[in-house]
Image 1 (cartoon, rainbow, N blue to C red):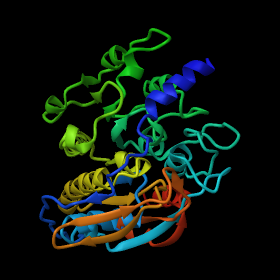
Image 2 (image 1 turned 30 degrees about the vertical axis):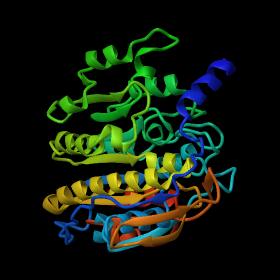
Image 3 (image 1 turned 90 degrees about the vertical axis):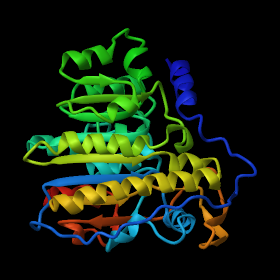
Image 4 (image 1 turned 60 degrees about the vertical axis):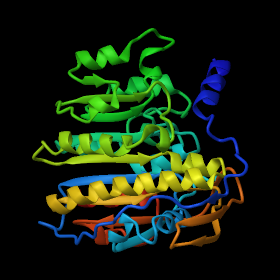
Length: 370
């Protein structure tokens, strides 16, 4: 069993090898950034979109801003704070404990998925939203069973238990989830085919992102890769397509919805100390933020929270040029750091997310206002 776990871990964590010669982003095409003024129908949101840039710190954001010639969609967010990210057993969190803090509102040990330090399951914000009659969804550029998205679905003592995490999807009432990880649903040690089981439960199961673009089903299980998705140059606008589809499906519920969107590979690029990769993923995430902002601006009842589970790489900017988008990056580590990470809020209730907070405060504040 240990050998299987180790082999599975290697397959899922194979994005952490440091690359050489990728410290400079020379610049590239930029996109126009639209400004949105928050207009709300009430003080409390009907919908919540939580966007997690995995590994995203302030320097990652400023690298993206420089690369896009001085502007990002994040500039629309006027309520800004910071969260402390340490886990219950380590000054430097992993994505499982960081994700669980954001999803469940508790500090836990590194590796835990939806459980406290005593390996007792803790209700998460998605489950709370469902109890209120709201629709729910999860979108990720990684495998959907990876630590951060898993923290909003599963309750398992170890993040490497990918098949058990996949099985936990069948225990939920989630309406839409889109990401990689088909392998953990169909090629399993217990010989279950969870994709077929999902279909029997009324889910439209789709494996082609071009088809996912047009799906208008009540429930959708979208698998965009056998395991992880490629980087943004390979997957193109997958995150924007997935997000748009999820919003269209979830918005049908008059009681509202909760949606978590993860830009997973900002973290991966930082593990690799690859500035080129990092900037590309940061811009892809910001474009998705723009799409959600456009929805919230028109909807007027949607709160958007943008944050990170931790910072990765100790990323610094040693030089650059806003006119050309050039970035000269540097890293102090190939791992996570203990730095605080920013929180941005837009929409009804956004004023509650400023100042310095614990990461667990995000969920607690959402429970109070959602």
